[in-house]
Each structure stands twice: as structure tokens, then as C-alpha cells.
Length: 101
Image 1 (tube, rainbow, N blue to C red):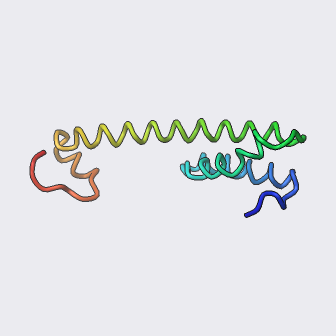
Image 2 (image 1 turned 180 degrees about the vertical axis):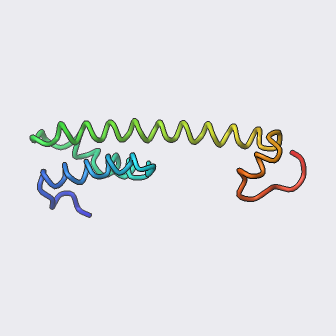
């Protein structure tokens, strides 16, 4: 999609949709929002909708970083303690590794 062809109101609407969509456990939408609208929010000359777009881009970046931190923490804890959790660790595993780590 070429953002250059969209009117500013449509850009704001699309940015807001991606921002709100990220709250539906879809942090990838926040990544898309940051990548697509970064230039619109911080590089382009000032226009009326830019302040709101800038806010959505900043909040999307913050939400994405929070998701990455939480997911990285969970993966690290799970990989480290899965064997010690016994049966619960096995139930949480998609595939059960053979042997003892």
C-alpha cells in the first residue's frame, strides 16, 4: 500500500486501526504500524493529523517493546525450568524433548 496516495484523514484512520488491533493480542500490527507510519509521524512536514499519528506510533512502539520483553522473559523461564516442572512442563510443551537436560 502506498501511503503517499492516501489523504491524511485516511492515514490517521488506518494508523488508529492498526494501533487498536494490536490490543487483540496481535503485536505484529504494532510493528507494522511503527514501520509504515514512522516517516509520516516524524519526517514529513507538519499537518493537522500528524500529532495523533505520532502518538499512535509511539504507543505502538511501546506496546511492541513490552510484548517482546514479556515474550522473551517467558521463553527464557520456560526453557530453563521446563524439565523441573515435570508433568506441568510436559503439558505446556508442544513437543516433548527426549532425555534429561
